Image 1 (cartoon, rainbow, N blue to C red):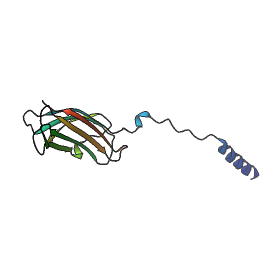
Image 2 (cartoon, rainbow, N blue to C red):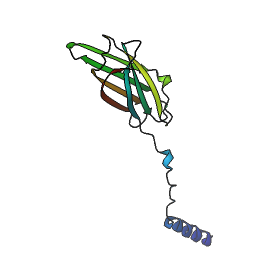
Image 3 (tube, helix red, strand yellow):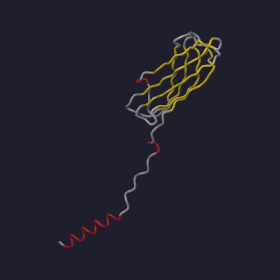
Image 4 (cartoon, rainbow, N blue to C red):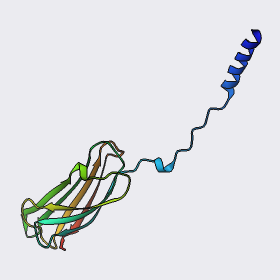
Amino acid sequence: MQRWIVLTVLTSALVGLAPPALAADPDPTDDPVTTTVTLGKARIDPKVPGRVRVDVDYLCSVADEARSLTVSVEQKDPEDSSSIAFGSSRTAEADILCDGTQQQRQLIVQSKTVNWIPGADAVVIATVSNIGATPSAAADSLRVKLAVG
């Protein structure tokens, strides 16, 4: 009986001296994907001058939460400061693919006021929100001269 007690105490003491188990090196492919968005071309639709087609590249991680892609365009008339064309377009949540790979979309933004003016400066903003990811949103903006095309 005494030998069993001594052996148990000795074993317990030796276990306490053992180095802790090392965690496995994290796999770099397991790193979360950062949400990003990049604007491409923005051009006036030649058939419908009240529409602008905007190319958007985005990347977001897999998430069970809500996702959104929104593009807005604003343009002041250089000859009439009271005339502003503006509009925005939001993609339905079900149409946003967030799987950690680069995605490309073209969104159509309809002006809610007047037609877009070719050759005039416009501000284009794109936002991807990926609630549940870190960071939860990303945006890009450009000042461009809209051209028909």
